[in-house]
Image 1 (cartoon, helix red, strand yellow):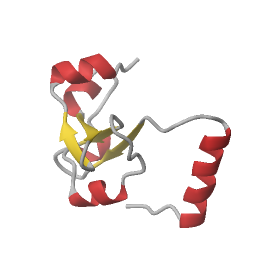
Image 2 (tube, rainbow, N blue to C red):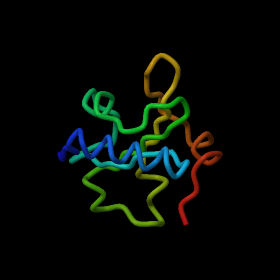
Image 3 (cartoon, rainbow, N blue to C red):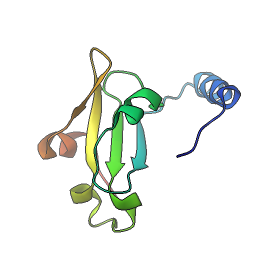
Image 4 (cartoon, rainbow, N blue to C red):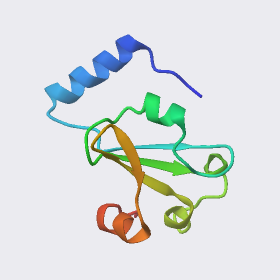
Length: 98
């Protein structure tokens, strides 16, 4: 786990606003299976509806470009501040790995 200091988060958010950008997704990994943990829910950097959280298993050690879509679990931030896992067909509509 790593932690970004509050002052750095403020600077990041300010830069994003200044440059008229936004963070559409976050990618992280877990030591075993891919899922969205309570800690992932609490510490997510993206919080807007439709934002994606992509989780890779085994710290992504076994993941390649070719296996990314089968290894990854993809969650979308939904109404009510909750994360909902997307189906494979939903992932295909919003995510492309090149």
